[in-house]
Image (cartoon, rainbow, N blue to C red; front, side):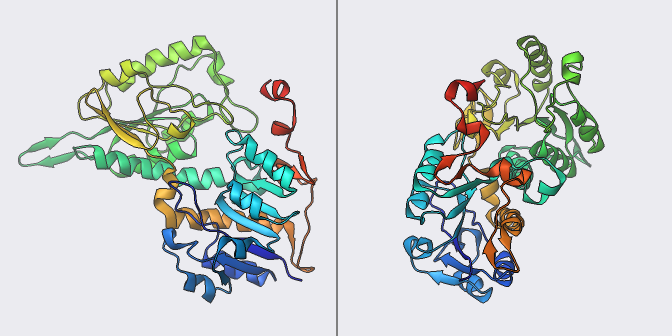
Length: 384
């Protein structure tokens, strides 16, 4: 029997992506799998059922019909209903937000499904093509600048006209990871004067290569502020105070601030206080890309656009999903590349190498147990 893969329709709020596209379905079918797509799964991404059918998929009229006999289930955001409806031993690949949804992990273990979460791919060369955080953050950084432009009531580039000269917008990007670097590049393309900050030393050269000015307290702690995996470290209270003073001085001069700072498994660091918001000019804009993890700005509200002290603060949820077609395309390719590791093309069967570093990085559950080290320990040990 061929491996059956189910593509389910998303049910989470603000979610418009789909976990497969006609292009990836064609490749999955070529691998010898049987692909079943829940009716309407691609509607929000402008992908019709007929396009999936033309690529070789079968269309199921309901979630239960798609899930029933599926060996592999693909989702953007995995839900309790997906786990409950899957057969024992099935593999469910998707975004679990495991630090916020530990009950979902336990549910997967209790159901005896294999849960692969795509949020924390290993930062090794082999895993780049499967790195969901990078592919989706790239789009989020781009969209953040467009959202800022929508709410900013002036032009971005310098314009010299017979009636006078329009000064360019000043944009400050906080956090120079994938989203931040794309925000810098996009703001520069629109003609803004851009500066950026990050606690990782390697980001200085990256920011400057894109034409931005780097802003940071560059002391000894700053020079050691990056993990071996490339993530930002939590900084000391003393460094945070010095950095906050520099940021406060910088923010007061900006028209637009885009914040992107996240620490895996923790509440987003607070970078912008209400006092800083008050210091900005009327008509300025803040876009908080970390709003779903607690927010980098004290005044941002998840899922809303608010006005505080004359400043518009944008807190859209799931920003990548607001570019659903492209986000789905990249996400689907990330998953396709992962499935290339777990499906034996010759035997047309699932064959998981549990010793593979990539698999060890994303596997949450196996044979009724929580196996990922970040979640399998006792709470006190995990917190440490």
